[in-house]
Length: 329
Image (cartoon, rainbow, N blue to C red; front, side):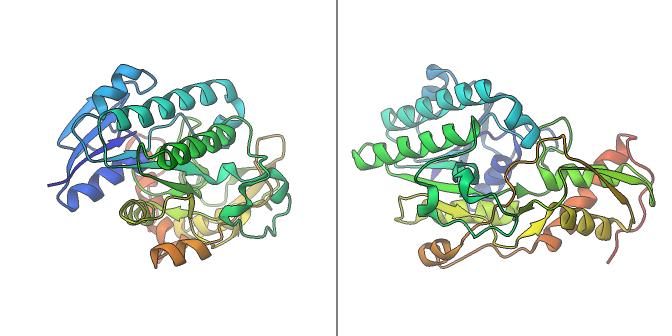
C-alpha cells in the first residue's frame, strides 16, 4: 500500500484529493491548520500542523512516499489583492520548508499546486484573450503577491528536481470550483461567490457583480482537478503544466448560467470599484493533452449543476437563503 501526504487537507481541493487517493487504496496522512469544515476527512491520520514551521513540515513528511503539497494562504480576488505581504510570506515559508522536509525525509515524489496567476499581466489585458501556453510565463510579470510567490515556488521545485534532490511535478490551476468549497467570508472563488449571491435572493431581485462583467475566465470542476493531479504525479513530466479547461466565459455569462440553473431571473448591478483581476485568462491545453493523453471532462454547466444545489442547501439550512425552488433541468 502506497503512503501519501496531502497538505491543505482542511481545505477544498486537498479534501477531494484525500478522497481520490483513499478510493485508490492509499494510506493517507492529511495535514492542515484546521480540519475540514463540511464533512469529516477520510484520511487514515489527520494532523493539525502549521506548515510555516520547519518542525511541523518535518513531522508531516515522515514515512510517506508521495507528497501532494496543496497547502496555501489563498482565496478569491478580493483576498489575494488585499493581503500581498501575508500571502507572500506565509506561502514562501510553507513551500520552502515543505520541499526540503520532503527531501530530508526521503519522499519519492512531490507535487506542487501552482496557479494561472503566474502568467504575465501584459498577456491578459483583453477579454478575448489568447489561451496561455506554459512557455508564456516568461518574461515574468505575474500578479502581485500571490502570483510572484507561486512563480518562485515553481523555480524552487525545478531546482530540487534538477539537482537530483527530489522529483517534482507542478500544475498551474485555472479556477477550481465544486461542492465542499468555501462560498462566503472573502476567500471564495467566483463560481462559489456568484452561486451564494444567487441563492440568497428571490427571483426578480438584483445581484451585485464585481467589475463590468465582461472580464473572462475558464473554470475547472474539482473532480477533474484531482484526476489531473494524480495523472501528472504518476507521469515522467517534470515541467509546469496547465490544469484547467479552455471553456472561456464572461463573468456576466457565469452569472447567467448560475441563474439558469437556479431558475431565477435577476438584474445585474455592476460595481467597477471592486477588484476584478485581469481582463481575460484562459488555459491552452495542448501540452496537457500531449503529456497526459487526457484533459478535463466536466463542462462548466455540468459542474455548476453539482455545485449550486450544494451551496444553496448549505445557505438554506443556515437560514440565509429562501426556501428552494426546483433546480432547473
